[in-house]
Length: 287
Figure 1 (cartoon, rainbow, N blue to C red):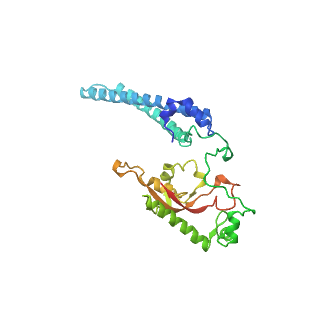
Figure 2: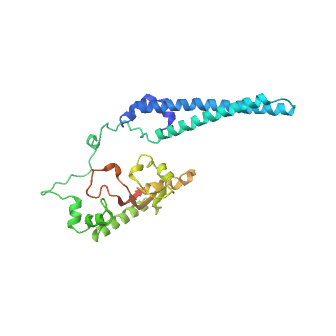
Figure 3: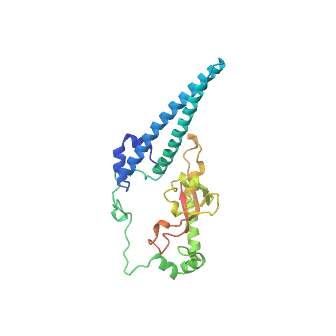
């Protein structure tokens, strides 16, 4: 989430960078104006509360002297009503500001090329040689089916589209890759974890999944607000949420293999075949 102080200090610079990510300057201006109004209301509220405290002390003094404090009491009631109105407006602005700040993307690095999609990416370097074949190579889903290690047809029968069975050597290969990667990360000092596969919405917000990717998640159909994890990054990153670690405890490295669940609502019509956009898949995560 962008620091509002940075937006205040360098509005035009932030606006220019966000425009390269599809955010209109008018949107940032609306946020800026709300922030200005918020700070004005905070000052008004604090001044009125200070006045209320002063009047309250005056009322107490008058009552001690057995005097008539009715005018002061009426004035204090009006001040209290004014505070309620201002605080209600402030709460409304806070909600709107949160809606803005939680959906703004991060600022891109100066070296990042500006473009609409992956076709505008710039190749920085290439590792190894691109293989050349004397025949037309098959797609991975064709190879998986012909080898009898991937079964989309029965996955669809059992669960619907974007599901599959890993079968025989396919299942063993997948398990072997998980074990290999977990062992490699453990050698590098990562602590292996088996995290919860269901998390609360605060955890989804804490890793930036909510609100931006809310439509791509599977939520439990009850009143607890729980969500199937889209990646082990969510529970791992939230492991220390709300805690302050001592420097002697750092750095912390976690790794975990978990299922990931994604509705892929935002990818309709794209990558409908193969392993790229499944509703359920396993992967090893590093945090």
